Length: 108
Image 1 (cartoon, helix red, strand yellow):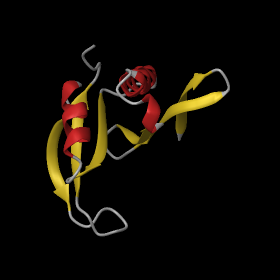
Image 2: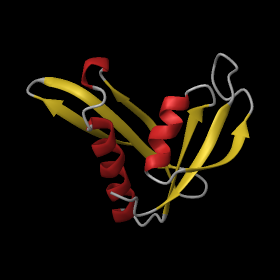
Image 3: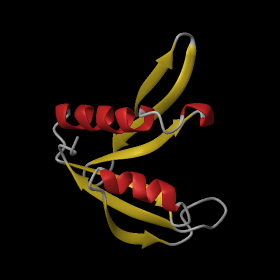
């Protein structure tokens, strides 16, 4: 697993985790501190991990997102992530996940 961090002075503002999956690279996790959201940090993290994925030879990137998290789904669609299928009960609380895919490089 590879981690990319966004720092502001001595504070970790956000991070993204990239790992391999069966068909390519997977954006395994991404988080930004609530008070720093909607400032472009998440976008820079997604673009950063996509560049790392390209440098590692991947042509596609995948992710899971909660079916109920519409804001996140819309965010990923900006980067041309497309839904592939639903994974029933993916999350610990039993919620379904939407498995999404994007071709690399991502649009800027």
